[in-house]
Image 1 (cartoon, one colour):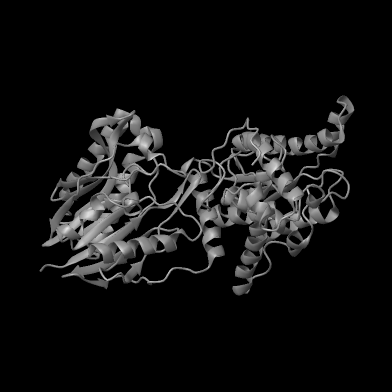
Image 2 (tube, rainbow, N blue to C red):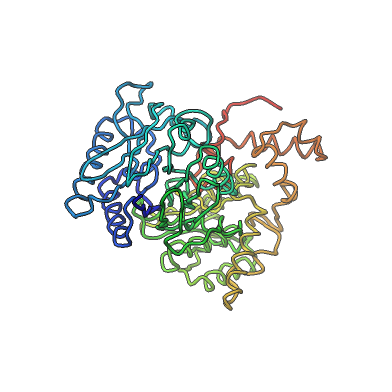
Length: 549
């Protein structure tokens, strides 16, 4: 029986850049063919990028994608690559409509200059960040094709997360190899669940499984790759890298799979490494895919802005990061010096723009209460950052963390201004852990401290009034983050949280803060999702809401 050399091609498509994505797929096919690959598999919607959301309700968009698949088949044949079977994802026009959806989510098999098979996704996820039942028409047809005397089945992402559908027919059809095209976003610990799903599919359906995932950032989603090959016994033969382009090659013959490229069967067990790389990739791709060259952010000397600046430096290079210190009359000497030290350590641009006189002008012309005066300081800083953005084309990064967003501990149109929020889904206690982790990475390489120790160890403060600390207004962060995880992450109510031993008054206060801050969150910048319950598409609650539970 002839051998298959399978190439799991991990790519980073740009949504809507159909011609650019096709060029990248062709380049990867050509490179894979040079290594003997004769069956190349790409991720879900690799032709159009993913998720396409309501773009797929446009007839012209779907038609352009289908034409691109056909043109790719012709191009491969013309370049003497027609012997290679290539599996790509793209929308295809459906014969019926589902609401206003007009297209299937399709896997196309290209071979010999044409399309020899098409599989349409059966299970359309309609939870968390997914809204595919709005965008696609489901199908229920089992599809397999023959290649080099092997029977190869096709399924797409959610099809292996749900029971039933074409996946249940794999073993009855005596399939040798199942190809799973995926657009599966990163979440902490999600890759462990993926592996279990793939192994269960392999053993229950008696098939080897090639699981191919996208990588890259798309708005608030980060795809981490982590493609894998599992044989029919459930043994992991190989795993691709996370958060980067990759090509995994596996020789497959008579059900026996052998790794043909230099890849480990192990993934990184360092959860903080995964989170940091997810945040860096999400920021980098948002900047580059949207045509920005640089970013600007306020450097307060505190932990949040320090971590965001370090992520930005890792993502796009220190030469493209602009930090601005904007001290007021309440700013401590150590905050100003910590900001300078951070910028020196990172090697990023740095300038100081004092706001004392600007604030005084407002206060002399307006009768402001203490809180209004504090907010004026934050809004002046936001205005400076946006002015720098307008003047130089920088993307403004907002530095608020998930804990602050949860309880509304920010000034709308002040420290919340910006186009991207790198730590939006990172609770305060995790921000500290990431800072220590990043410094340890430097230390392991024999390099000096990156984030100043004082920024990590000093009590957090907005410094909008004398001797202010965050704990003047909020519970201790360790307790606060625990309550927030129960209320937001696990969706528990007041009685359930209190039964865990928390002070009822503190719990009620935290819940009230969260509920009252919904209007602020609706106006906030997007940022990389790394948890299963991120603010935004994961959690959709009314702003006007009197329920107390």
